Length: 245
Image (tube, rainbow, N blue to C red; front, side):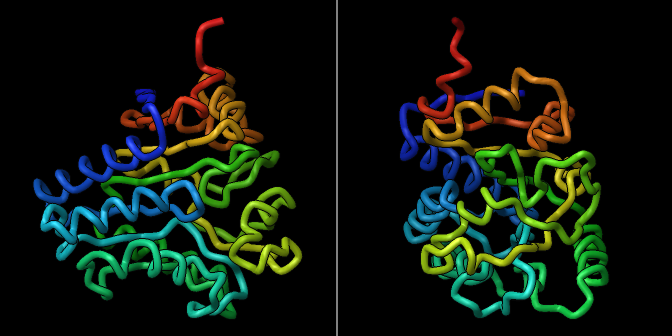
């Protein structure tokens, strides 16, 4: 793993946004895999700022989001689709037809997951996958478990994950859906390049286990050790446990 430590979250987000904009300039039809949650918000806002200044063009890009809550309509205030519209899609010139989401409200989640895998393959695969990491080590909604699903699937969320997402549901973890649809580990690992962002001291222990620990299904992010082109973009707080003793 390539590990880059930034002085703070602002510098991290700005630097990564400039890199993504440059990639779009070199390959306008880039396929992006996108994460949700608090961690990438500043990155998305920086991308919006670059676009506003004519420095980032999304007109030929395609996006696939990692996950979505099950049983939630696409226009629900707590949906990840609404989240992405607020923080990124409304700020850049990404064509709506190039935006891909899992539909959490479908009657047949298994068929929806198969549809999503087919759509990713039809787009030629994901060029750059942006990830965050949960405090329990999950990426996407691949929760710690005795075994991990390789492909897009329906997952039951841990209590800690529901608490982390409570802000989207009036601060009440009980209102957060108990299940979600998520890209699987193999789907994520098939991206050509991966950048995982981690900020804040609450992520330091997970980052340490991801980097220094064994590959373990109870630390899903540890599977990134298997990828040939992965970068960890960390602020100093998230990287604190990686310092030599």
